[in-house]
Image (tube, rainbow, N blue to C red; front, top):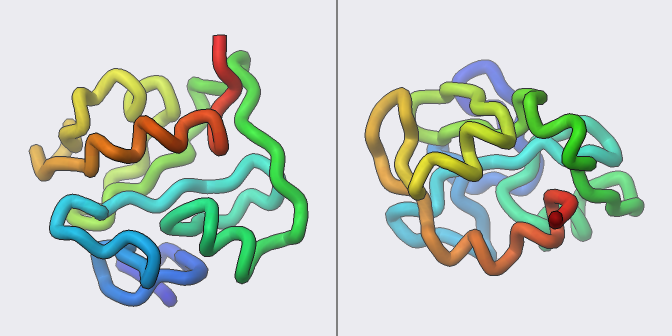
Length: 109
């Protein structure tokens, strides 16, 4: 689905929600390191992605890889991880439960 000019695979609405995660505050898409494409979640990537999964290495956390589905601001990984679950652009909340899945997207310390 094209969302404000960005292609987000697996999205079902204009704020990047998907069939797996569709609460009000589920409004980000993640650019996957392995294929460089945006997906709402790891399950969408498994279903519609490249078939490989690799996490963003820490030395690349300055790369823009998080898309806010409300204002379409593209955040660096560091900005996202330090955002306290709020978009710095539009102040909309992100789902705090996403922290449980960080290990699927980002290299841990």
